[in-house]
Image 1 (tube, rainbow, N blue to C red):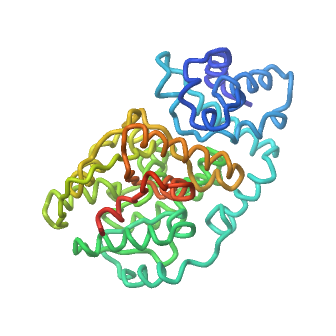
Image 2: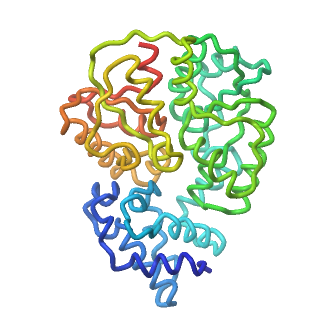
Length: 360
């Protein structure tokens, strides 16, 4: 069922090692199966009818879809494209792994992959204070809402500190970012996106806290014909503008910190400057050796559902990268990467979210 375009990319990648060194999963496991080349080799056998998709589907879900391989490929091949297409094919053929099926069912029935139905009491109280309809919506996302509620509370506090009048939805719809990752461009994914667009289009401006949601709002919605009439802006860009306008006041220090670029911002949305402007307003932003669009992924919450030890290694590797340039503090703008980094040893490098840096 794979498209001819994806088949061409599979055939081009299956014996190529160009991006071998850049895969965060492969670097964490040390296994050849966790490279784009190996994934392409498996899918080439499926396309030739030598094996069934079900035989390699676990390997298909060992990919972060971070796009490091795509960025590093000078010949323009795209392993993320054929990986996502394989996931869609698996969903349509009914051969998804059971652990993925469970997460997909949770997304469809409950609204988040984790199956969590109750919102943290502190977050619920903070959100309720902004239940009135305004022109600005702060979109928190499922990871912050259900897995890292303090990050959501801190995002609310940042806008409060700046004196922004904004709304937080009582029952925020899922953006579709989790389904987009799990089963790609399935009808169910688009339906969830359409429902979310209907809700956010009630506002003039949507400030998107989680880069994963920002990516699907600003890229996938457009590609899939889901109309957004609201002005969508990332939390990082919005806060940077608040600082520039003087609405949000900062106290600068000479403390040096490195910034961890979320790939959704730096690679997918070509946004690297705003977060650095925010960091520089409070400290001195230094760079890791691999940064910006070439950033190395630091892990996430969703993949930890089925690859917990590997995600811990991915996060530990990124902290080691920070230590390699002499950094003792790393700032991240990604809810999911923040959670992954905070879950491993930080005795040598302190992990701060952008909101924590602002709030002091």
